[in-house]
Amino acid sequence: AQTVTQSQPEMSVQEAETVTLSCTYDTSENNYYLFWYKQPPSRQMILVIRQEAYKQQNATENRFSVNFQKAAKSFSLKISDSQLGDTAMYFCAFMKMEYGNKLVFGAGTILRVKS
Amino acid sequence: KAGVTQTPRYLIKTRGQQVTLSCSPISGHRSVSWYQQTPGQGLQFLFEYFSETQRNKGNFPGRFSGRQFSNSRSEMNVSTLELGDSALYLCASSLGGLAGAFETQYFGPGTRLLVL
Image (cartoon, rainbow over all chains, first blue to last red; front, side, top):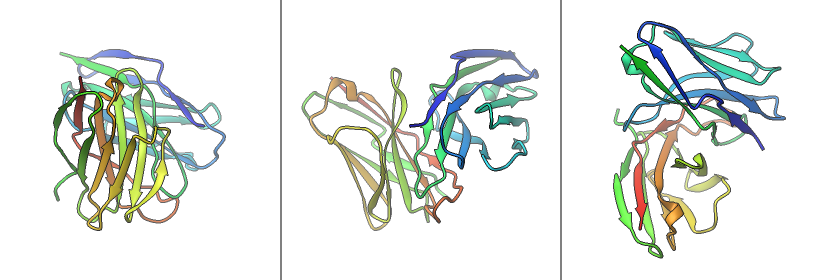
């Protein structure tokens, strides 16, 4: 079975600064996907960024980028130029490459952006 | 394009009752997955439906069941409610394409269930 660990329950960052959220996972699979989802307070969960395990290049989406270390089973999220709207719970998630969808989530990290 | 919708948004039930939650996926999406979110257990996968068939299942007791209709709308049912079933139930939809396809799941706002 796969497990996802987010070791930082809460983090805070000043507006315009950079913050990195950590995620490690455990799997014996070689082909899989990794995701970061954002859940703002009382709002819907949305996808922030995703990474295919077979790709060595780290994914980037505007201010969001990941550091994917497959051998270390690490998948951290870097948020640059933090904005107040980035305040949310962030979930790291794993999905095996198979027919069908089944996300395995970490416990989440609450990120607070301060002005 | 309308997003994933879930009804009702809030629900209060008592122990022993049963409840049905509904999820309407994004138009054209054929896969619907259900997740339970609680402070203690976090987000846990319940099951996934694709073309009216259960395609994946999590580790939940048989009291949790679901189904999908021909228009891809899905319902989940929880029978004999327990206090521990209090949670935010999220559904997510995706296109439901080829095996191993790299698809994004789009989440609904959730149904918050309180069991008293």
